[in-house]
Image (cartoon, rainbow, N blue to C red; front, side):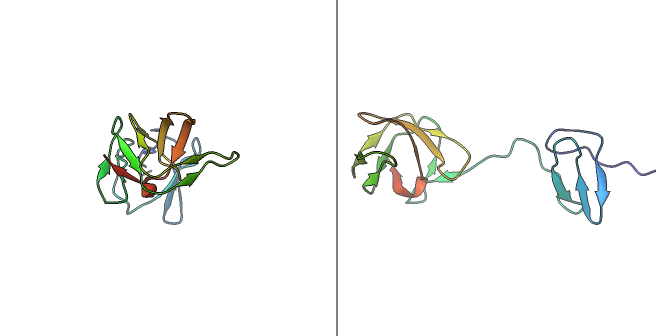
Length: 113
């Protein structure tokens, strides 16, 4: 019996083969046989509207009026936001905006200050 690789997500040893895919029954992760093994710590790169790389703790400026969903508030052009946090998802910036509170922003609507 050949040795199958451990799951790159959860490191489970109970992987199995289905056609040309490896499958982990514990976390349901699937990957191809010819895929290079990747570490579980993948670096996520988030860029602003100008292509600058954003990191946790950066200060950004909003480049477009943004309506706050569910309220009548608007984040105005030029609003500076300090100490951002990069998160995974459609809205990839977590932050607190003075006068509004906790928000999630898309990186295409901001530029690095």
